[in-house]
Image (cartoon, rainbow, N blue to C red):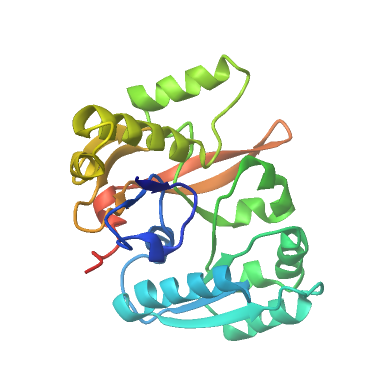
Length: 269
């Protein structure tokens, strides 16, 4: 039996065993996309602003590896207790660090208060780039008035990839009065992988399924994707995005497409 992971971003899943595959991206790819906002050259200050949790620490470790160890940047961290309700002291710490890029890794209902604190303490005026991942559509309003000041990384924006697969997905959902969301392609790609494993492999032989998927390059909703044979990492494009307010709603606009070869995580031995 194969295990196909979709939204789960933890890097630990990649290469964990031969039966595990991905249909979505992983944290390392998020961080590589975030690092594209720094531009060339090293020696810049990066601060990870995150919750003190496995998710937050995982993001710090990934940023430190990509931007610190490989990119020559200085990486610091500010981890906020999950129980915190007042984020003013932590926002003040960010401003005092005089960082070039603030990487925010946040989840949950406290996000609006956190963003307000960063704005009130003047962080957006003191930091060159505030970068975070673009989450599901339902979260767009949580950014409030600072939405236009944030540089977003994303692994899917439904209006961006123009190919037959994405057009099919978008049109099929519009007929149901729906629009694809951030993780919709993960389920779609999982379906593509299952069909490939059965048709080119075997309905009953898992070893043949694995062989059919390893090294497979195909067009998914996000564009050209490849299942790396060595560790089953899903190589895929990533996007630089901004949010624009139109008719009272936030709409994602793609600034740049980052090709899969530039966002590929290192091979797991």
